[in-house]
Image (cartoon, rainbow, N blue to C red; front, side):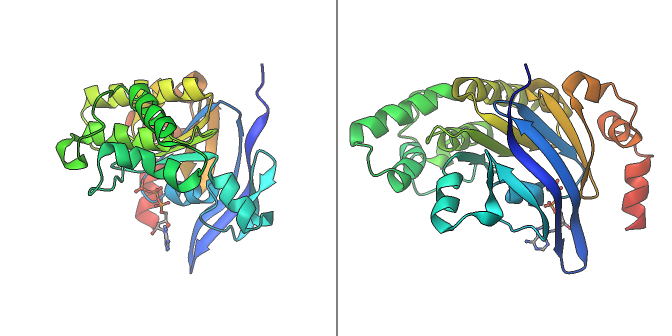
Length: 258
Ligand SMILES: Nc1ncnc2c1ncn2[C@@H]1O[C@H](COP(=O)(O)OP(=O)(O)OP(=O)(O)O)[C@@H](O)[C@H]1O
């Protein structure tokens, strides 16, 4: 059954000076769908993610989340809508001076005045369990491996039970086993929360694992989108070059012309 559209992006443009980064992005993502966006360096993926969460303003076009257009919201509405997002940054972006517990409790203490100490404790434990790391709450980030840091970052991202999860390069720099583990954790988080999930990655194996649908960003446009299996079997020359890792092809020609 087709899910109702939760994220709607129409003709999105963004420039920085003469650098026209987003050049008419169109996208519709259903509730609880898992979309992966692939694309080479500098294609505009992170800039696009910033628009999705309302941290950058579009020059033209619109981004609508559950019927709310970021450009039309006042300050309070913007804040409220942002609390419905969980965002995981590259490397986990933890506060190094705080324990794992305090890192995960941070958004709970900041954004909900209603939660008591006991409830916060339960929620932190539940989040750590969801990411497969119970019992590490008292450790400091410096005591964690790269994969563990990412998982604590995930746990913090789901603390407020978000409806939409954004992952920016969740597996970059990790070994293939940890990449698979993190893929499984992302699937588990999405299923538990029934969250709409949008992941940016260069990593084909994690894309295959976590996506229902895949989109290819190339020179500021989503040039090809399809359900996962159809995407990886398609003939689009840009997708084929990226997925097969070929040095020759349209993506390389575009880089040379820059
Ligand atoms: N705040 C900013 N000010 C000016 N230019 C920016 C800003 N953010 C991004 N850019 C430019 O936008 C372009 C796209 O950057 P972006 O980070 O979105 O690429 P990306 O596809 O995420 O690449 P990567 O995979 O390497 O992270 C780059 O040319 C970058 O220099």
